[in-house]
Length: 119
Image (cartoon, rainbow, N blue to C red; front, side, top):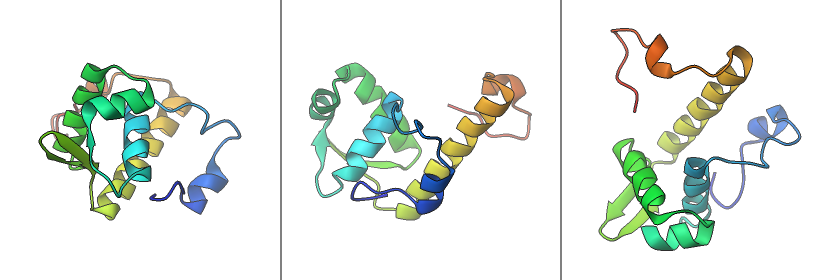
């Protein structure tokens, strides 16, 4: 995903307007991935993306818990585990596709006892 590129399969499967809007988490991940040669302060990421600093801090903390970003106070960088990042991106796209096909549901409502808790 580095260098402003996407997987060709994702490109081929995408709707015409699929890349127009990204949620804030996607925007943060994409920003860090596109600038993977640098580490950033959360406030700078927020400024670059026009987002609230508190929201970016919360997003980065969740991404860190999932192993998708690295953190050395006060700096943040995208994970160097490219396979983990690709897997998370594929899962995210599959989840979005399921939402689109079946309607948005609260994941907690369909979670079974055998599933790990969802954050």
